[in-house]
Image (tube, rainbow, N blue to C red; front, side, top):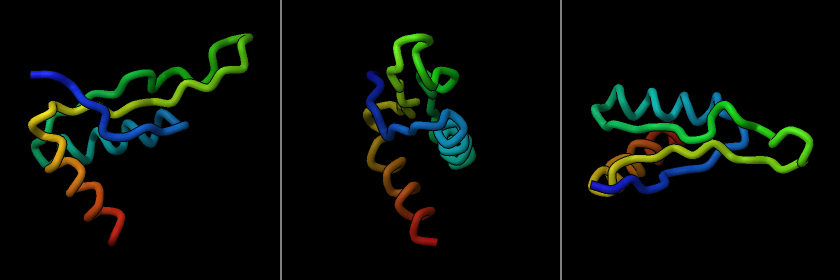
Amino acid sequence: MSLVELSRHMHGVEAEIIRGRLESAGIGAVCFDSNVNIVEGAGIALPARVMVLAEDLAEAQAILAEDVSL
């Protein structure tokens, strides 16, 4: 059981919305770095990442693709 990256977002809110959408469909997801936009003083942007279990990746991708096409 390993986590894989589903998507990256420059705004943590977007990542959290996707996490919630996946969880409402029964797919567990977590967000990494969703509270970090810029490393203070360094000017480096850290994207928020949505992570899912490897075995859920295809289903999660299909849900996101379906939502985009609406």
